[in-house]
Image 1 (cartoon, rainbow, N blue to C red):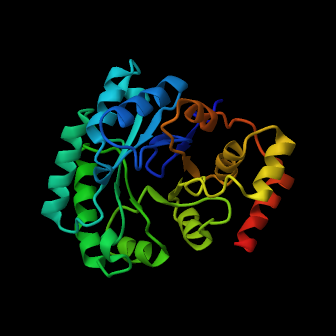
Image 2 (image 1 turned 90 degrees about the horizontal axis):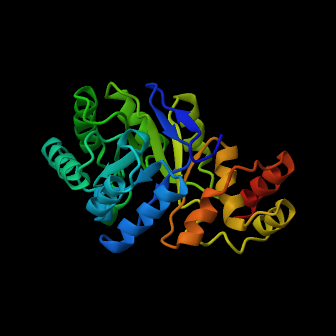
Image 3 (image 1 turned 90 degrees about the vertical axis):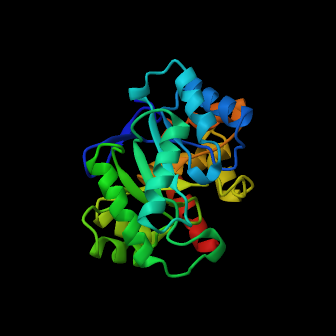
Length: 272
């Protein structure tokens, strides 16, 4: 099996390809269209976008133009972090679905527990309000699965204590040296898939000495080792690039790491 087509199974039985192509910070228009199209050509079958990225229309057009059957592409988008009302959530989902023009969304996430310009503020009642809309969308078949992003244990505990559907996924910033251990453990114990965005720490990991040593030993690039590390931990990586050669490089992550390699990378966490 290829890492691009191998799947995790969410708690509701929906399967999701183990590696996703992230589109954060990729501008709408040609950059988003061409990079998504290239990712699909390379073999990615999981595309991750968000209303906040402003590129849903270009991502959707690339999927439609790719020649890949819609049923083979797993598509994630997200409710803007600042939207914390039921009416706002319904409106935002409608706008995303229209922009994407791909029919049913495969995974719909609450982008963050608080607005980006007020990180850490308390919007727990609002999160419950919008989550109930996501439950409605799930029941109506407009999305196949629902989840959250950037939620920590406290956020997850509060949400799940007041709603019916446990999130199918939590997408968090997760990479070598930043392994979100408490949140990851909570998700494991509640059958919530952990997705890792910024698996290369937005490029900040590429000069790490431990990563370089493992890459040299295994004949891989530091980026490939960093992405593979998430898979060894059963975390779904979401690498992002607009460069065709890097899109291909980031997809070539089938080779497993040895227990010794993983242990060396685990030790990076204690150094950071």
